[in-house]
Length: 82
Image 1 (cartoon, rainbow, N blue to C red):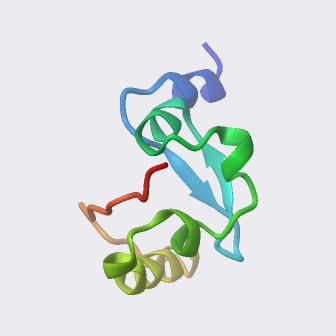
Image 2: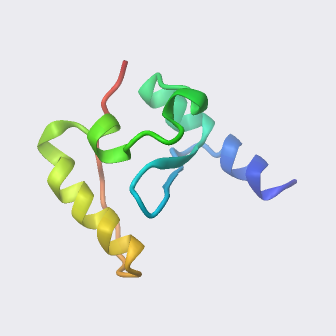
């Protein structure tokens, strides 16, 4: 099985962002939870578009840290849904 197949069929939401914070990975479970397809989500700003407003600041901090190589363990977030 290819890596992309494992990501796409995982029983957990898996998403990725580029250095600008735009979605560049969106697996099937993430699409199921949010109601936004992979095609709809690609290249949109993850935090501003898909994260509930009350968590946007803290999620942005975690994402910015991740881009800089600073790890955060066990962080939960809440997606906006259609």
